[in-house]
Image (cartoon, rainbow, N blue to C red; front, side):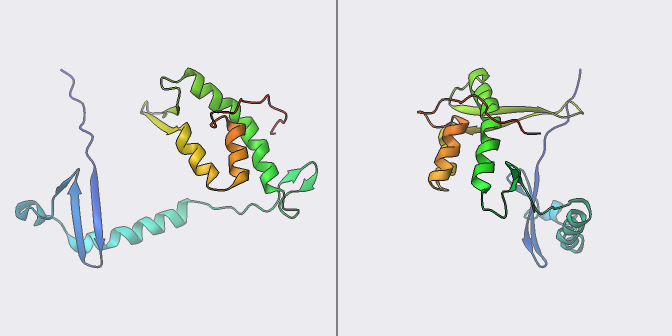
Length: 162
């Protein structure tokens, strides 16, 4: 008999010296017996340790130049044009996800990690359209390029990103 490891989620909420620890939806700190095993001074150190880890291991970059037709799109304020170029490339992928997916109104991306763990990320066409349309007419145009507007058709790619 094969025993699978249970998928348990722990959540820590609070600040200062007042923390609450949950396993799934059960508050461990409310349980007198389990709560006695929690070292609050150790919990206080967790946010600082996470911040230090992120600062040491996550690099950030500032986009300083994007070339569009051999012009710097950042300095000439052509960022929207760059987003359209990118959307046209990814529109083909979005169309394929919609065509091959189980739910034709949802973009589903299946991810398999090197260790064999599988996850899915998904967003409905209507949610993506809503988020993009919140940006304004430029967002609606990108939604149409991506094919998440019901009236839109995926255009053939005009650009090659290298």
